[in-house]
Image 1 (cartoon, one colour):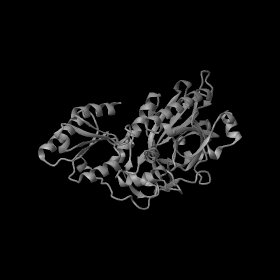
Image 2 (image 1 turned 135 degrees about the vertical axis):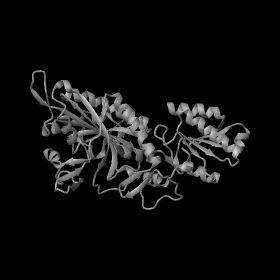
Image 3 (image 1 turned 180 degrees about the vertical axis):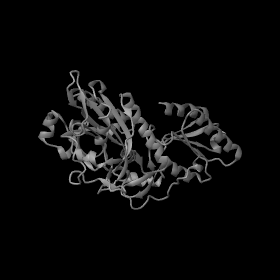
Length: 422
């Protein structure tokens, strides 16, 4: 991608009116556009990050035997009344609307009811189970608090997965498996070192659940965590009883306290939704039983905001390789046509090698190009100038470490191709 053709522009100043660092940096770098509080559009750079996050999650879930689908955002009132979640007295952050004929609808804030209703048409026998379905879908929540940038939105992208088993024992095996699948996802996203499996109250879905909390001063939660055992408990739920419920001995842990961001959660739903929506299966003897369900969520835009909060310095964002909008930022300082042609040639070699490249071919001062490259935060920067060409080399800078070295153009192609393929 030639940067001269990228319609988004870098702002010189951090946008006013934003208190969250993730929103400040993403707006300044042109990754997102703010429509209103808690509502953001994803521009080309931001969408590339979102798609990379989705692909990491998709790869792990598909490997675990899950299947992708997409459910509707518009939801029938009747379905949600069956589980007593339509009333504002029970769920107070619905967005609701009315059709021309007076029919009430809701904009989904989650999809347990919807997936149970769908599955009731396809699950009839124990032979139809287990089954695991997930989606990437826009959710709508009428949040009172919308001051955390893309980490708490009124309209946001979420991955929600739902599992269906014959009984609790089968469910528990999959539930334990998903703990490790989730941790592998967060490791790949570059958040593994700071993310903890966290015991928590399961309201409003179940008695208890597990969250995945990433330590950050930008967090709205507070956790007590054991760094060695890599487990934590939400401080709001810290008592001798959540330990009894989880079957743990409080004295075996050495807890520290920190602010954190919830980036994922997993719930054992039991038969609450299947009973309400007649999702049953017949066993080998022909006796009907309600399906045992689980729910597993990851906030995609929340994860993106969390990465920004954790991965930045005084100059801007520093994207992990796996989610960066481009693998390489190729910065040209050349003016003469013959030199520009050599940069063009390297750019084409990188593209032909399958490397995603943002090529800064704009006619700007070097200082401005470097400052904007820092703000964008692409992990690998390659600089070509008349001086480096005289030495038959290019300047390579690691955005995170700040290390500089001089390489040949062929080395750059070989190295960057290996970074991206790994």
